[in-house]
Image 1 (cartoon, rainbow, N blue to C red):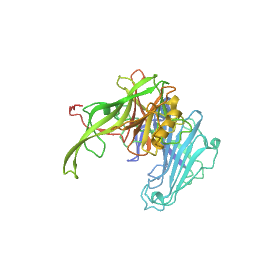
Image 2 (cartoon, helix red, strand yellow; image 1 turned 30 degrees about the vertical axis):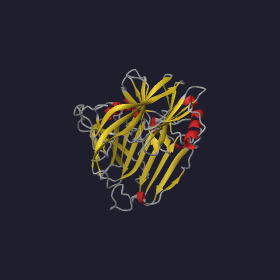
Image 3 (cartoon, rainbow, N blue to C red; image 1 turned 90 degrees about the vertical axis):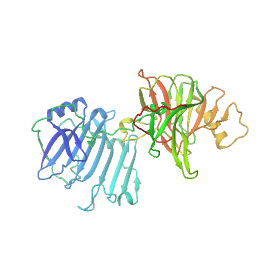
Image 4 (cartoon, helix red, strand yellow; image 1 turned 180 degrees about the vertical axis):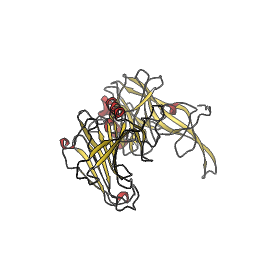
Length: 432
């Protein structure tokens, strides 16, 4: 079987066509430089490609889509380049088994099998014989870590990885097809429908939530205006290691997230937004102010960048699209704390809030009223403190670290709900 091989800058997942075809030499140069490019494999007499591969070494990523004769996606493979440059880790693969030619691509009733693998022997195999609407059977993949790796081929020597999916029994003969004319680099951006390496969730307008006059929407309220941040006391972190975690979850291994900061005492703030709406109970327009985020203000300099803090077992090279890292809670509660005093501070939290101990000394436990911040505990031995705050629900909450141009931490933020969206600036300002 002869398989035609073509190269391009990108692959349009919606139109199913290559974007800006390139020569094999340009593709080789991009491969050596770590820049993204795609490889398209086609069989004679077949309109839909057999498979399309996206390679982006700078993103530690190789992805593959396999297509059937009708152009439906039947196989997706996600591989990652980790510490061994000679091998690839098969992070995730999905197979769709269409029941007939009339079934549309990714139909909810289409049977599918998903396998996710993680280093250290962890993994999950999810079988859905009736698709998304039916039962789900979850088991552990039966293979050792050393059996899961895939050798990294050199440029131009990749096998047709979807051969098994297409039922090919003979080794194909590859015929490299050069474009009629390689596209000139005019600096244009690829369409938004083009395939890109997966990225973890992005920070969004975090700094703007503490800037009075900025207009946002949370998806439910069409227009909200940021007001002056509200300062709610301070937090002592004498150890220089700030913990951000859910105090209501089992913490046998310590807090979920830690951030290094200079030892000191830092202001605690709430980012707030004001909005008006028609209240059917009062029969009139009412205005209220809601808390959008809580912050430990480490420095007065504005944040030049924001990054998502990672837990001890997190590896960004393994993250899928929009994946988050953060702390978990099943009691709609998070906290900022001195990590070195974590255990005694957590014990005081449990005695005061969970057990309701009336004999706690007010020097080590105090309630905070009229705020998203709920309570404070203080370790008398070290002077370290814990301040708990409310979230708007259970789940996992990312921790965003703001850094100055020099890379110094200037703030640590947790959004108590979702990420809002900025509205066009109309020059509005509000008072405090």
